[in-house]
Image (tube, rainbow, N blue to C red):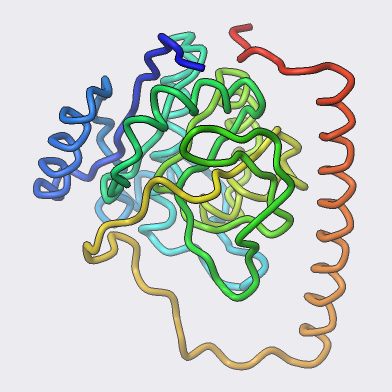
Length: 265
């Protein structure tokens, strides 16, 4: 099913990352996707201002560590992009980080599959990083020409490319009001934020081989104590149960209500 939908894109880009901006702007121009640069918040330079204006701790609770300056800047930059979508009353939009690299099928995905997928889910993520604990498949919602739309029980991390409806942007802003973990963790934990969430299988965007703008995490952290390992194990079981329940409820809702249109209210 072809569509005439033109979905605008916002690209998060640090002022100093000129080469990244040149690469992604050239790629989006070739793809025929309307886009706009959104200056990223450089938390390393503006840490004191951020903490003076936003009076809360940026603490990654599950890892028991402060969030890195790069993680804080990334988090706040995505909120700024979401707010721009809401202020402009856009029915749907894409958010890219500037290290996004495109699969050769992306143009077809953008024009033919993504508008349909956004009628099924308020968040559609089409980039991700898989780890041993993430799922490479999920419950299928719809099959497109270039990919399937699935709800994974253990979503992939990464936030370099995803699309939202206006309704999804509004609800994500609310969900992101407490910064207690990196943005990609908040984005994919649908069992916590309760927003309709799905991924494409396969992903049509990957992260290009640039040096990370986010500081590397501490790989020499001390091993977890037995009580903490037990606590995390129980929490994982609880999350899994909630996600299974969520997916079952989503499938029932889709069967009863049919396809929904992107919200503009």
